[in-house]
Image (cartoon, rainbow, N blue to C red; front, side, top):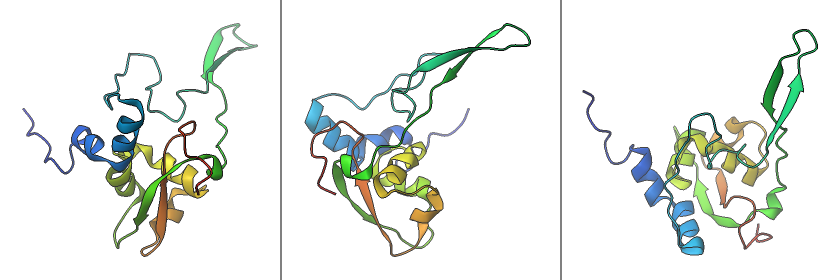
Amino acid sequence: MTAPLPPETDPALVAARSRVAETLLAATGGSTAGVRVGGTIAPESRYATVGTAVTVDPDTGQEVVHLRRRFVPPADRLATAGWEQVADGDRVDLLAARTVGDPTAFWQLCDANGAFDPAELEQPGRVVRVALPEGFPGAGDA
């Protein structure tokens, strides 16, 4: 049996206390709990809305289901939820855990800051923009 995670590292507790989670809850009156169903894309994934396509392998005739291409939204279409200063030793996953509530959601920080390489956001002293996912009101405030 494994010991429970300390509250500051438990992903569920971090997500519930994040700035983005609070903003989303206020905007939707909903819950931050995401349920993954076997074989489907998790709703919090960056690929949740891209859809799938089917390609037929010309050699075997077998159908291969794959994700469509994800187009990164322009940063100015995302609503700002706040700003976070990068401290010494911060990694992009730590920034995402602290601000978005999910260390695997580092891509939201990359999208909000126009960063192709997540390491661009790890410079101590840099101020990183935290944004809500595309489609939430308030865009254009970057």
